[in-house]
Structure formats: structure tokens, C-alpha cells
Image (cartoon, rainbow, N blue to C red; front, side, top):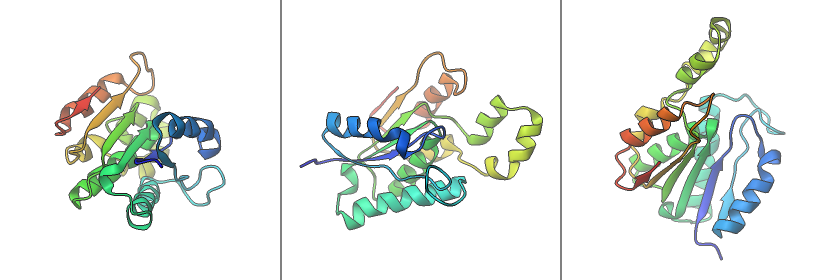
Length: 181
């Protein structure tokens, strides 16, 4: 019987169908339960994908683990990958504020904020079209200042989309006493 649960928040270029082999590998390698909620608007999940809808989805998954499956919050590892780092940081900070701190937070290729990420990638026309969705999105650097659980940040050194320096900055602003990048 696994003693840990991994709450996995997938990247924006994926869905659960594409993640399934990776999730099975994580569960077997780490000997843990894995819960990976599908984001609204991804795969076969209906709805619109917004930061708020992704945050609600991940919150519901965390609540299910803690209240329905009775897994203590300190036995839940929250893992976010790329876009999924936004809702992962959101739930980790929210849980900490409610004295339900998770056991650890793992961020694979995180970003400082969604608006900054988009402005680094897109031209003015695209930014203008996405203003309502993106600029109200995650500000991971601010949220991460409320996270006290152990933090592990994973990031390649030559990433043209997600600047590696942002990962180091996120690690630096997190007050956790145990952190690694």
C-alpha cells in the first residue's frame, strides 16, 4: 500500500491521454498513488480552460485526496509541469494558508507569471487577443512566497520557451527551508 499521493498537474501541451504512460511510470517508480485531474477544455473534459477553472479543478482533486480518501495533507506531493505549475503553486499556497500544507511541491519548468510568459513569446496582436485570459492569470512568484513545504524545481538549462532564470528566482522567493533547483 502506497503511503504517498502525488497530485499531478499536466502541461498545457498535453492531456491525460498523453500523460498516462508517464503517470504509470511515476506511480510505479515512486510507489505512490497518482491523481491527475484533467483540465477543463483538455482531452474529453468539457469546459473552458482559464486559470480560475484550472485552480478549481486542482483544488477539487486536493480536497478529494484529503477529505474523501483521508490522506493527510503532509502525505500529498503536488507536482506541476510547465503550465501545470500555475495551479500547483496555487493549491500549495492555498493549502498552506489553511494549515493543510502539502508534503512537498515539485515544479518542472515553472514560470514567474502567465502574462510575462506570453509577452516573452508572442507578438502584440496575440497578446492583445489573450489579454482577458492571460493577464489575470497566475503570478507564481507572489504565490510561492506563501509556500513553506519542501520545494524541488526541475528545469533544463537551454529552454527557449520557459527561461531557466525564472526557476531560480522562484526558488529564491520561496520561504521553504528545504528547497532544491
